[in-house]
Length: 485
Figure 1 (cartoon, rainbow, N blue to C red):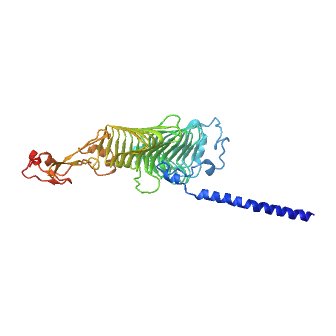
Figure 2 (tube, one colour):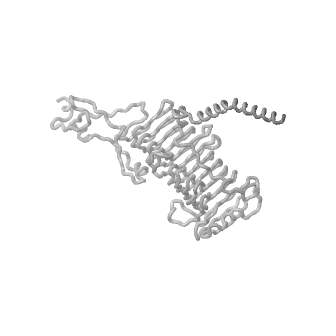
């Protein structure tokens, strides 16, 4: 009987499998088809972002320091215990890997000062700042004399940050140079919701990640020089409020990227110079001087008295609100782009090869100067553009039409439409303006003032032009007689 029961059970299981087989196969086939079927909607409506979504792995404590546990005593997290020294001086130059500079950080009491002396060379170490403190380099540092002085230098170990700042911690940096020559996927400064205030700071960074990566919190840079050799932006503010004044950012393929959080104060870029690497390749992420994006709410950023040169796109806006005033954009393919969101551009000078302002959102463009562009404005059907008081120097846009005057004799005529938002300029582009922008990078001067051949003689009453704009000498026929006989 037991053998019979086992046999019947086996037959029932086999029957169940034979019934469920087609359904399982159908579900598997449907799943494979859904994964391999092309999404034509995505192909027809690509994302508006000027660059691919960032998929790079961010540097984090858990990967590089597994023994870091939030909520446990320092140095790897947790509450701050009172005590320690008010001022700690460390001289670790020439002795890399001793841990002296890391130990010095732990000796400083909350609110105290760490003074770094590096007379024998750079101090090598990773400073994990988990309490409010100030870090000063002995001897001072002048960013304008970058190669003429020997300031105190803190160098990151290979593949590690120079400094990490914990959430809610205020760190002040003064008179020091941070160096990460082999940063890998680690930024030189990594802040997770901290507050960084820097004055007379220098950063030399080479790697895959930004020189400064701030995830929330605040970053305030004054009198700072950043040389970032990376394809990432030199500064990446992810929900952080960024303030720069008298800062110089060079070397990176992209300058600054701000992902606004929609709350708090807007980021402000003032009296700053952002210079790109002049990358002209037609592949990979675009080269952007300043990119302002928004998560959900319409975050804001303000740019004043700033020069942005050497990028494919000078400034770009995606879902945020950006105002640019009294600034200069040069050596660009497109000066400003509004993928979506709002741009206010006033009292600025834009030197671009292709387009001055490309709009797919809302833009207000007033009292600006555009130089060398093939198009001043480029817009789509969804855009809203308010433009007035703009001036243009362009050999492509400001050419005359040839108006017939008598038989096969023509005269040049320039037409200006009052509704186009700009006026062509026929005098030479000011030389001192050129020297402040493209000329500062060695580009030869171009007046961008198109004048027909022998236009001076024509204005004095000599000769005329044919329909193709070639000058014809009128001989003895001069003045108004050339239009009558």
